[in-house]
Amino acid sequence: LYCLYMHVGRGIYYGSFMYMHTWMVGVVILLLTMATAFLGYVLPWGQMSFWGATVITNLFSTIPYIGSDFVQWIWGGFAVDNATLTRFFAFHFLFPFVIAAATMIHILFLHQTGSNNPLGITSQVNKVPFHPYFSFKDIVGFVVLLLGLIMITLLNPYLLG
Image (cartoon, rainbow, N blue to C red; front, side, top):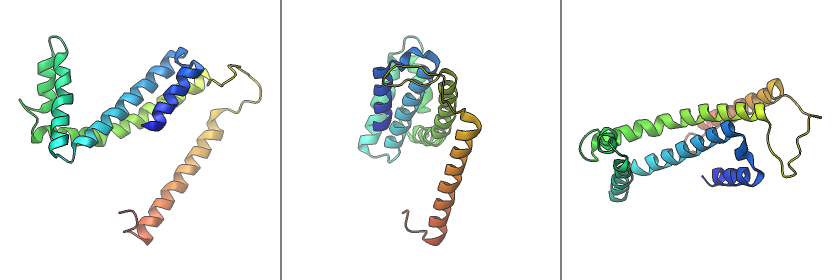
């Protein structure tokens, strides 16, 4: 989350919020990341996480007309219980995939509008297109990382915990 906060701060400083679509997708990514962190905090199911889930989910009850029904839907009943834990686990598993998709949309919007720099100068010279150059570079980096993790897992399975 710290890197996301720094990224948002940089965007505010450089005025990137004026590119509305890119900015809004970035805000959605930030909120989804915070939600994923909260859901992971609840999963140990101790006293702190139980009451954290109770307090944070009860904040939704302040929504007019639908708040209490929405909270009961989140809980899967009338109180925080095993159904809530199961739902939170499922959401904690699924949200990273949603974040990855939102990140791809964010990058797509970024490359359509262009990024900001400290000088605020928009230059049309010496630009490299995103595809195929950066796409290929990202795919190669992903494959190298994946192969490295597979090698670590196969050669020393207890190293990663």
